[in-house]
Amino acid sequence: MISPNFEKLIQLKGHTGSVYALEKGIAPHLFFSGGGDHLVVQWNLQTLDAGEVLVQASAIVYSLRLIASQNILLVGTSTGGVHVIDLNTRKELRLLQYHQQGIFDIQFSEKNNLLVLVAGDGVISFCKLNDLSLIKQIKLCDQKLRSAAFNKSENILAVGCGDGKVVLIEVENLTVLNSLQVHKENWSCNVVKFLSDTILLSGGRDAILNVIEIVNNEMRISENIAAHNYSIYDIQFSDDGKNLATASRDKSIKIWSTKDFRFIQKLDIEKGGHINSVNKILWSGYNNYIISGSDDRSLIVWESK
Image 1: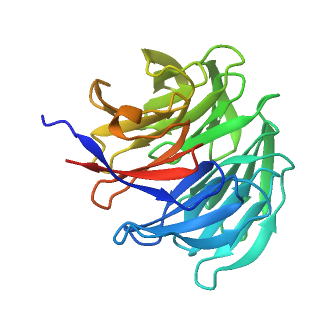
Image 2: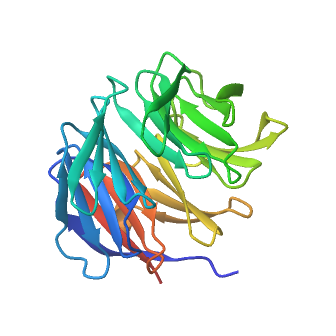
């Protein structure tokens, strides 16, 4: 099996604050970024030129989510607001204010007509996707909620909590099924991603990458990988599902095999990488690029050789 080998293609500079959010665009060659400067910028991977400012948000942008079926972009901010942007007119349709603290992640399920807001007040909100009305809120912990992910069948939602736990929620009834301490107590679980219906990955402040097996709604850690030197902030999969990338406060990105979780490559300062924390990554289907966003206020596009 040939392992991917990534090299730096270009460094994009357009933000004047840390980059916290990345999201795929309405076409494969487009993507969005958001950050500490309150801006949402659209970038073109075909031209790799200066980005276009799409939104001036009301506060720091922590999360972005494209709802392609409605051609809207949701922009989660540090003050708990979610700007709903019409991508046709580039105008704001609504401002959702179901929280007063940061929206760290936004997820959705077309199958269930369900939008999920993950917030810094320890509360998760569920909204109807078609009209964005609030259905239910659940308090999951006394610390920040950082990430959520639907499994492949979209019947289970996993939530990463600030106390180091992962909570499983049944989507049909919006009830808590189970929870497990997967990271060091009170050390945040920063990101959760489903590899399959039965395999969940988590990354935390303890720099550990966990492989969690789920059987009959019971969770068990099958692998505990000391993946980085400092907090893991993001996990993303390649389009073909053969590899995953992790992003860390240690200023690096690491590439792994999803088959056996074998380490493949490190993208760091020595490879021309970021000089500060890597907060977010996006594995694009366009040319198999990896895009990374950092506290150094830049984006780097990595290409596979």
